[in-house]
Amino acid sequence: MKLCRASDGLSSKDKKFLLEQYGFNPNESLSQSSTTTKTKRRKGVVEKKGREKKVPQQEPKPPRTTHKLLQVLAGKARRKQLLSPKGMDVRPMMEVVKGAAFDILQVAGGCPASLRPGRWLDLYSGTGSVGIEAISRGCSEAHFVEMDPWVISEVLKPNLEWTGFLEASVIHPVRVETFLERADKIVGESGPFDYISVTPPYTAVDYGVLMGQIASSALVGENTFI
Image 1 (tube, helix red, strand yellow):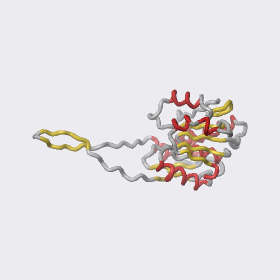
Image 2 (cartoon, rainbow, N blue to C red):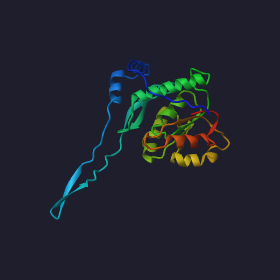
Image 3 (tube, helix red, strand yellow):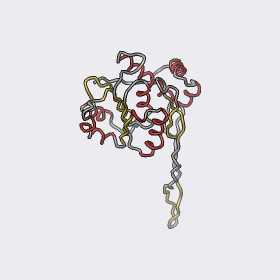
Image 4 (cartoon, rainbow, N blue to C red):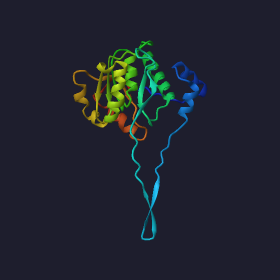
């Protein structure tokens, strides 16, 4: 098992250089990445027996929609734009970090121009941008683990169809925890995955526990990159 970690601790000059290298507008992208969206709930006041009592008002949830902020960075589907849910924290700078991580993997695999052929497992796949990047750069197959039915039907699957990678993909509509419990059965005769990407929501998991579960599962082999 080999661990590869991506970090965006870069200087502004390096960030601008990398953004330009991967086709982003550095001025727009850096300003987007520094902007955070906050949602505030309003509270109403209800009078009861001469006293005021604050109670939260339930606001109707807006319909979920998509937009195109991401793109494939290299390989067969280079520059193809990908759907992502509106309101999702999508930062172009993280896309550049992703591209740099793939470049490192290619060099580590002995083939700087592309990934060595293999099977990719994209945990917490969301838009599928990581697994799609993997297929675009040379992986023969990618498995996507995503539990949100709307994301699968309106974002992930359309992205796979748009890039032409649907036939090289397997979508697992389950929680990652459930997927890990079924690891022995899922691996079957195919053996461990060659690459595993782990991109959970930052506040939703205990990283130490999660990485321990992955490392001890049948999904990981001696030469697996995580």
